[in-house]
Image (cartoon, rainbow, N blue to C red; front, side):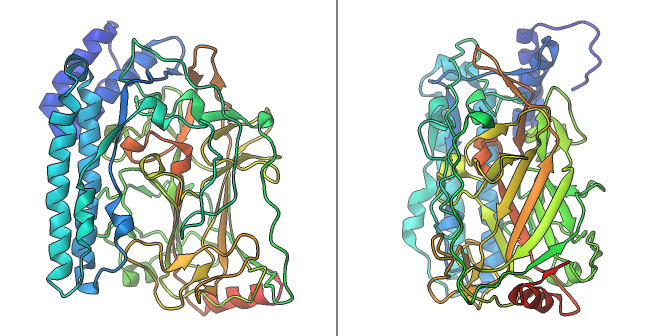
Length: 511
């Protein structure tokens, strides 16, 4: 929609225009139209505030994550299954768009969400899950018929998705989340706003809300002590310098989870390292690609969701899939620092990473999946050794920057470079001893530290937050901080993988 409007329209007029545009655009335009209306109202106000939702409003749609339940997919069925899993994500996105664009109908009819959104979504999901069953069984694989029960979705109200409501901000070690009790003090829940039940916070109407932020100076120290190092510990480090994505290499694909599917992530990624990664990249094409790393033998792909500041501004993808059309709005922030470092095990030597090993850490869907696989770490410079947050974004004091860190799984099954759910081939070491369990082998642990210069958001007495920032995500996940995640594909040449392992095993600091 154009921004050069000479005569200011009323909020009601804007919503009517947005609804009309939604009908013209079809399903793909519904969310954009609704969100652009909300953004327009926000931009017309003197202050760019994010508003809280009424606690009783339906905030989002919660669907079981079928992909996490798949543990064995035959090689000949992987592409078909990946495509259908991406279809499930697309269906949820479209249903959320309909949810966001039909608030008046919902207010007029208590059964509207069930009859017009959740019910039809169940039918679509059931058909898609059945196609996954056929993809697997037609090549001789076994399908767990209980997965058919995952077709039904539910709705969540705003109070069910509000951060900091007495939880411990930590994830359990379930092949995906470190058990580090990254707690934070709960900030006050946002006040109900009966006048804006459709606005679940944020510049685009889908988060974040005030309760997603906390003043880090008011959070008690929560960082756990590291395991004691044994005599067999691998104490070296290897740092690779790959830049901060200054060249703006972005896309909304995810070649690990949704190969061959454009916009498979439904949110924008920063890419450093390998420069030719998209939905259609192959091992061979990535091995032949250039790298942003100073060490040109490091062709690995390091990619993560972008962070945006919601100050009323827009970026290049305001009208694009994965961007503004799916609730990811505001100015994209490039990290001022990006450190990529491999570290060792406190319990043993490490083996070299296999070529093309794929690892995803964290969970992009914790708003609906829960925190079992959450591995988000948010903090501020000067506080990193004291406080790490999982379910809230930090508000940093003057002179301090936002820090976003990742510590990837450091145990490998010794055989597979990926798994059906992209989790079970790797695991975290025991947090107390640092030992890999279940016959897994210790590998160099990839750690990443991203630093952002962000004007601190301010929480208002009425439950609003001014100039929020948030990580990109699936629209129905409401930009919760716990949905932060990171992706990695190990691609090296000239024996670099062995060099990294040797450096770590011999206690040297290399780069």
